[in-house]
Length: 300
Image (cartoon, rainbow, N blue to C red):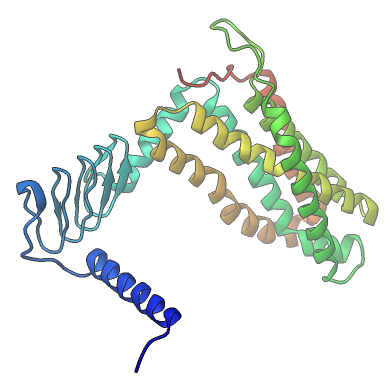
């Protein structure tokens, strides 16, 4: 049966995809590696490197037992690192400790990450009492949560449009400068907005709660953007992955703790005291970071 031009093209694409899949995923035990470099048990090696047991090798790095390394990095037992960094048998906790140490030593950087963590925890406390606020405070159906979520999403879009302008305010970056950087300013303003939003949600009045949802959507992304921008600009390349992972775990692990904690406290305290406590947490973090934190300076 004669193939049409489309059929021939599809056949070529299919056979090429199958060949690529086989080259990348199927074992190649016993196939000699280029440039005189041995490859072991299913690994592939190229450009002067060695790989073992399903590892993949690129540009001078070594990978073993499922790990991936690039640009001179070394990794063992399923870890991953790039640009010259190394993760050994210490595993996740050792890498986390490296990131935490950098956040602690770099002036101003740890404070920005902690502000984002506090703002995320405060917002999660508010989420834990959301339906109690709608039911007891406003006397509305649970479906009203959809309205609040939509408004909060609109605030997040607006906040994203304004983020660049606030980050462009770079402060005084001279060695003796004391003015806050754009990252510090953005994180502080975002945390203050989160606190104000939670105060508005504590008011049993639908317009105030809707305005609070808009404000929450505006402020919360600012803290997260500020934190990860500061991490990117304040961390040397070899440690960037581990510092980013530490910051991510600090910021995004808090909702897993704060949300069920708020739900557990709800029968005892009621939703309003929880919202007020969350507002104090966010406002305090924002004000303290703006007035007391060491000025942040990017690397280099």
